[in-house]
Length: 529
Image (cartoon, rainbow, N blue to C red; front, side, top):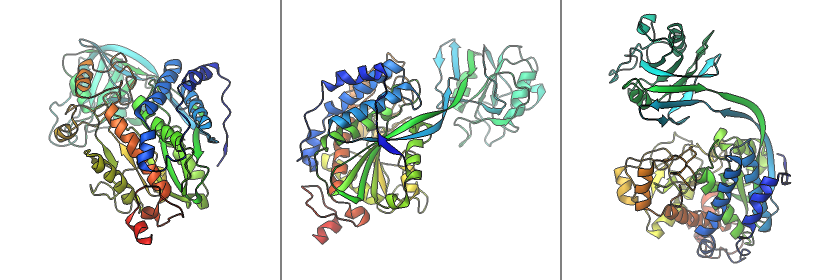
């Protein structure tokens, strides 16, 4: 593991972003912020929002905060600067990763313009070779079966040259999944004169999501993308004019993880709390994951003078959006002796979604979504702390699957107990949740998930104006953030960190000497007292 003090890049833009924010620095942390009551009072919504506005300013300058791009470097500079001002000696861990910049597109140009979302509504093809190019034309369904048949492979769309009889040269072919290889379908379309292809899933249960097209396509010379069943069914009506573009670039680039540790505490019993610092490309990532990064940063600042029983290590991960790369690199390069010192890891990825629910990682697997032996022992006790917090605040709560699909994944893979919070992404709020949490049933928890509108100005950045008017009427929104959810979760995060900073016995049986200063004790700690 290569950790070193951080030297701010000699980039004027990064310095400009940091300097104004310094004027609004909070007062120095109080050394008595050593209980949930005191720390939650110190960790304020305004403090968290201040960091989020700084992240927005970084994105406004650089276009986004994605790993491998200038906005991520500026985000690292910002976090390091704030940590130093709070009295920490932050370190960074550098790592290289496979950078991919994908500007592929699927758009309906008429009759009603619509921009489809990459990685949510469609993806580019992964054929060998993959043709890079763009085509615009009228879309023509090719022997599609709508509504879909009762069983998979009912559709033979595009499998035979005869399916393209009378296909207009220069048109875009809409081809359904089923029966034969995607590569054959694409080459048949090209031979029939198609200028591009839009694949879509077949539509039966389990065959509705984005499809990934692979295979050998010798001589392919037209752009090809693949969409969900819903997108395909929508485009199959009325012969719209569409644009299909395949455009991507690959490189090896550098990203960084940032760390800050408490000065005091048992170094052989480490409590970690982290969040990923990067956004997706072409967006500021204010909810995903500005909220987690900003809240962990504010908790760290307000705990900087606290003397916990256990060493507390805060982390901001790089390249999570590229596949948990920063956290995976950290865990993979950490010697086993150092892994053994980590009592638990707390992860916070999206904690202020505009149409929120209060999701707790299901550490006891009460929802039955995790396979046997997947969840490390001790994780259920972490979940208990969050459940008690929400219950104490009179707030509803839900389990969210303990599936390792955020930066806690590499930790649980080596047996380290974990837990965390989540307020929802592209999933849809149920009627029951709308009754308990308010908001809009049938709409995504975060309608701007992985989009440019994950910002402080979502409607101006492309969000559905009518939906956000509904959400704004139901809630106190701050751009693409729910102020209530973020405020409550900032306190939940502070409570969990300070609780485990003084007592991890419920999780790993270790209780460092010293007083808990009001932090809730586990049953085992009380018995030992």
